[in-house]
Length: 256
Image (cartoon, rainbow, N blue to C red; front, side):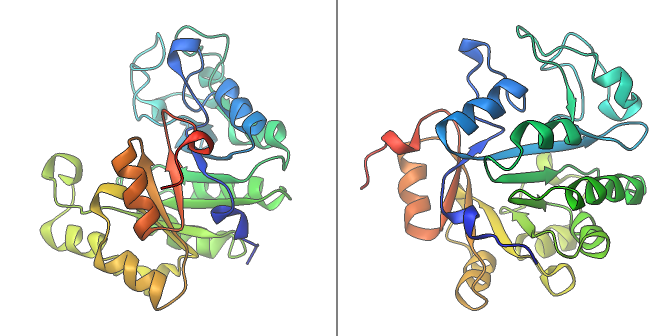
C-alpha cells in the first residue's frame, strides 16, 4: 500500500481551490492549479464517460456547470472534453490530463462517483486503476459505494482507498438504498470486505460510531468533509485528523 501520510499533513481543497466569482470553477484545471499554488492537497471527482474514460467532473448531469445538458455517462470522452465550463476557458478533462498537470506537486484524493450498481463498473475502475498505476505522485481514491472500493481493491490493491460516509438517513439523498442498506452505509459495515485505508465522514455528523471506531481501534485517519464554516472547522478539529474544505483559506483561519 502506498504512503498516505500526506492525507493528514495539509488541508484538502474540495474540488480544487475554486471560486466562481473569479472564474475558477470546481474540478477545473484552474481550481486544481490554484490549490497546487497554495500548497494544498486536492480533492476531485471522477465521472464515467460512455466509453468508460474517467472524467474529472462532479455532477451526473452537465446542466449546472456547462451550457450542455443531459447525463455525463451518455457522452464519449472525446465529446465531453470539448465541453467548456460556464464562464471560463477551462473544459472538462480526463483523469490522465489531471495527473499530467499535477505531476506529483500535490496530494490527490479522488472520489469515484457511482450510481450504486445500476451498471457494471469494472471497465471504469480498470481505467482508473491503469492510470493511477502509472502515476508516481501521492494519490488515493474514495467512494460512498462499497462496490467501487471492492473493485479498486481487486484492480489496484496498492492504491489507498477511503470509505466515504455520513448519517445516511435522508431518503432524498439515499432514496435508492433500503433502510438496511442505509444502516450498513452509515455504520460502514462493508469495511471488513473493502479494507479502507482511511475514512472520510460528513463533518456535521461527527462524532459518529463507525468513523470513531475505525480511527481509534484500527488507526485509520479520519478526514472531515466538507468544512465551510467556523463551527465546521471547530468540530473537525475536535473529532478528525484533517479537513476537506471549501470557501475559505484554512491557513488563515484562527488556530482555536
